[in-house]
Amino acid sequence: MTFYISRGRFTAEAVKGMLANPEDREEAVGQLFKGVGGRLVAWYLTFGRHDWLAIGEFPDAKAAAAAVLAAAAGGSLSDIETTVAMTAKDAVATFQAAGKAAKSFRSAGRS
Image 1 (cartoon, helix red, strand yellow):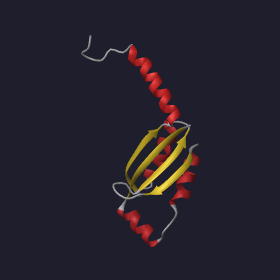
Image 2 (cartoon, one colour):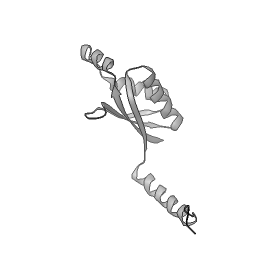
Image 3 (tube, one colour):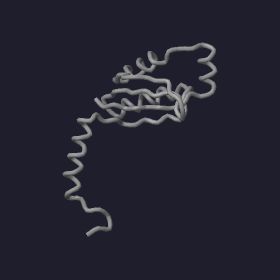
Image 4 (cartoon, one colour):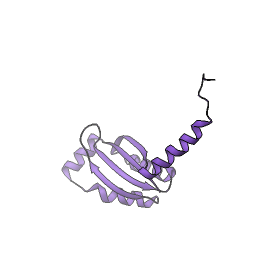
C-alpha cells in the first residue's frame, strides 16, 4: 500500500457551516477512505495556505483518486493537492533503481 498526502482549503460556505455546527471531520474522512479500500493515517487542521491535511494509505492511485474526487464532489473543499509519499525504505530502493537506469541513459544533447 502507498501513502498519499492530500491538503486543501474549505470553502467560505463550509467554514460558516462548521462555525455554526462544529464537527469532527476525521471520522467522516476515515469512512470515505475505508469505502475505497484505503485507510486514514492522520487528519489535521492546518494554518497557512491550506486549511487541512490528510494522510492516507491506499492500494493504488485509482483508490486515492476516488477518495479525493468523492470528497471534492461535496462542494465544501477547494484547491486540493495530493502527493505520493514514500517511506525511507522505498526511497532507497527508488534511488538504487534510478542509479542503475541512469548508467545506460543518454541525456538529450549529450554524446
